[in-house]
Length: 422
Image (cartoon, rainbow, N blue to C red; front, side, top):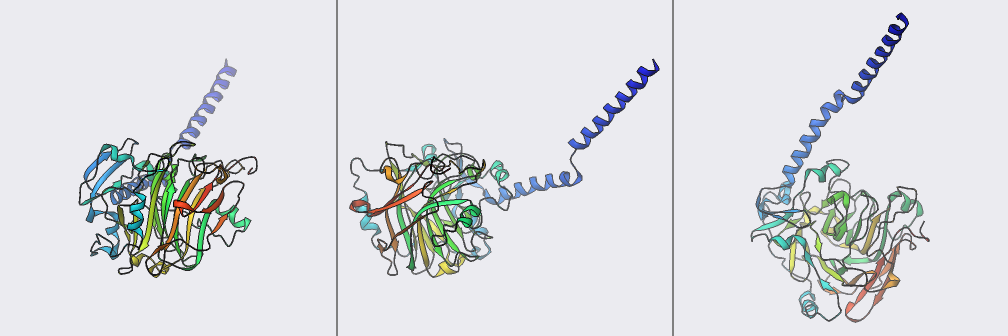
């Protein structure tokens, strides 16, 4: 009996120790108890900063909420240098050739690609005097590596055509298939970009197709203005294709952000929302859809303007945001970019463009057409000496062409991992 009690007592003691250990492991430390409310407070403060009071809110079929914000209340005016800024409602100058070209573009030919709109338009519009802003939610912030990192690209993601060092490619984790021009002064760029919904392997990867307006070196002082479409589960919480912009004046270190997620870009348009879904998108061997984007520098004020399609002037990046771009750009790039995280030790299967190689052509491979630059005389013209660049052409490739009503064009993209891209 004594033996049994002694044995039972040992067992009870063992159970007590286990329970104590479990409670200690489950209980948050003082540091984590203190940091949790701090994180909640940071998230709340950031949401308050980003989500301005709305005049009207529209629930989009894709789940987004689009807030119609008074023009003067947008995030740009949180910038100390924009406190007394007088909003420029129209650019002083458009590049020569824009409007004559628009008249040609409006005559749609059978079998050609079609223009697109945004999904939230199906449920409403924002009134005059407001701008549409995609509402940021708590989950959007919590997906980011930190509150500070939310809405920002990582350092060293720009394609560097003249330094395709394999070590650099591996370190950056970003891969590109682009056409580019350099060696001159550029005051803007234009392109019509085929819109797809590429498949993304990992939530922390993305696929985008865009125009880059670049100034300075590829060091710590790079200036960049970017616009295009992207699929980014990490940033938006889904796999929809979305219109986006980006800017930085210090190579993605401290300045700049996507869309209107920081102060900088001043939006004047009440019809197009940065970061909202593009609708519809292209299908393989079926209907093709594209968007036209134009970025140019106003010769009078020096601000960099953005136009979507033939009639939506969206707004501008004030000249003071930049150092090199306050004068001109030294390189223009057009094309695709993906993140290759190699999570399973193999190349990602995240698609670029349509997910098909350029050799497949129209309706199957993604394209940029009518690529142009704005010269020192504020004229839109076909760029000379277009070069191409891709880190691994077996994964994502690019092929240029010229002729007909497509002007200068290229097909680009690919499936990522395949038999020739392990």
